[in-house]
Image 1 (cartoon, rainbow, N blue to C red):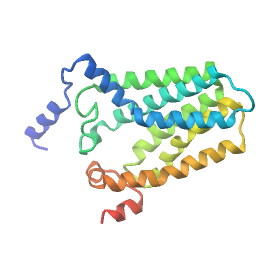
Image 2 (image 1 turned 90 degrees about the vertical axis):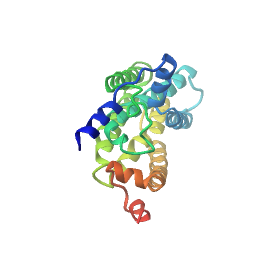
Image 3 (image 1 turned 90 degrees about the horizontal axis):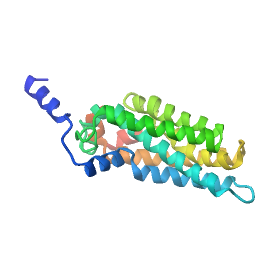
Image 4 (image 1 turned 180 degrees about the horizontal axis):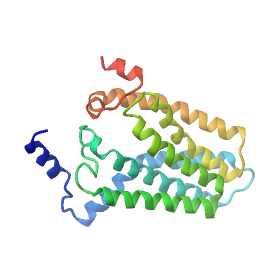
Length: 224
């Protein structure tokens, strides 16, 4: 890297002065609201299927809110961990961190704030099983899947695990114990994630290649 290009990179990552409204929108974008909606839907579906008889509306509310907060925090943490790689790919270069709308410190505080709040809600207002699975989502998605996806195509299977857990969290919130339906719910969502991820990998194969990611052989083959 030449001195000129290095200086250009430093300039690109500086935090641009933006309005309060733009800052709020940047935090919203950091939480991936569309993915969060899917997480909430899965958690609600798991809760509805796990209810035996009448249900508590307040418990349902906390069961939906906690996964929503957790999803936002997990997404924000992932983007902070991947901010350097995101700058290299066209379809991710406009995310809040690569675009300089937020600093890594702001993203970390936001991410861990949402994650901690979600875990407190799980522990105090739902149950410890949901809290345990919530922590497992953070570990598998941010600390295992995110670094692994640049090294091995098997990360596709690892990344599908945390995506299947919100439905189980909903089931456990309503049922308070394990059961075969919980594993069936997990399996359905887990298997549905594989073609979803492969489709994205194929669509953005050029950008992912520039970012250094390694994907499932089918996605690699389609790029040849």
